[in-house]
Amino acid sequence: MKQTPYRREPGALVLSCFVFCILSLAANNIQSLTVRAHDRPRNGSLSGQPLSAAAQFDDPYSDFRNARYSNAGLLNERDELKLGTQLHREVTKKFNLTDAGLDRVERVGQRCAKASLRPGLLYKFHVIQSRQINGFSLPGGHVYVTTALLRLADENELASVLAHEVGHIVARHSLKTLKASQEYDDIAKQLGELTGVAGDVARDLGVALGRMIGAGFLTVHSRDEEREADFLGVRAMPRAGFDPQGMVTMFQKLERVEQQNSNLLGSLFSDHPDAQERIDNTRYEIARMKRSR
Image (cartoon, rainbow, N blue to C red; front, side, top):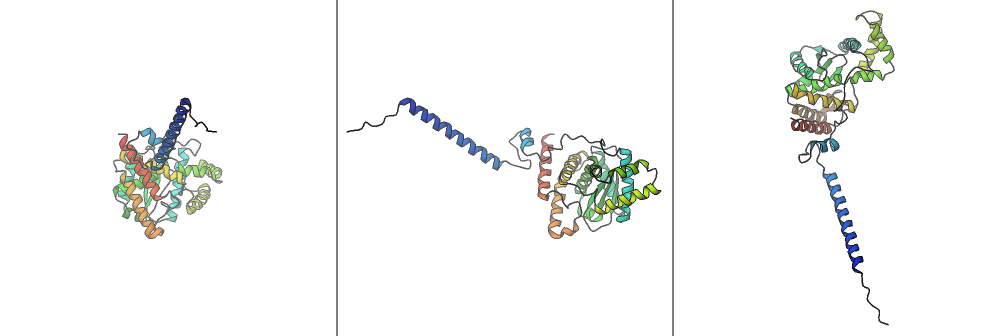
């Protein structure tokens, strides 16, 4: 018996073609999205995209852009200043302070401080005699850099370090660390009772704070806190009249030093975000600042 060949109805043929086209378009779109996700430019190179797209996908500082800074919930500013004075006394016991390069640090540092988001605080800059490349800050406006760092950094690079350290003070990072410590209640009580730099209260407080300084408790920060200080620092640099590119070149110098002799690096680099990440983030922010002019 001869079989009749199978014949597709015209409607079924049209429907099959339509479904095939839809599936093809969907596959192409998925492939395109995948390619864009993998090839998405980083580090501020979103030249063809609006700023909102950059902020949504690539902004490393999105958590800090709308931050508001104050002493609310922490030590009040009066006690913060007392704390800074006591901490500085302990620093002078642990480190050898020098006037070498101090005029330069004071001049650059005060410009960075006035351009910060906390310009009303009285900042005091100090130089520590040390072969380690380091910088740190303490509550109450005290900022320290080493003679080794001064030899390494040019003017803009020094400004990047000082603006970064001022950023820690602006964000009250050390005060937040202190608030989370077991010693906070005792220290806050002693600060409230403190009327001078001598006496039993000052002595007891000095012992507690000396231990903290020795352990680096108030000078070593989390990676997010370092990112926030980078952000605040690089934003302040143009307002202070410095080239923010100095932060990039400073990180590059620190990266080279780390590769050659990591023992020369102090807490300025230990436990911080990866150097290349900080370079990329800084370049992103510089590009963003240029676009917003």
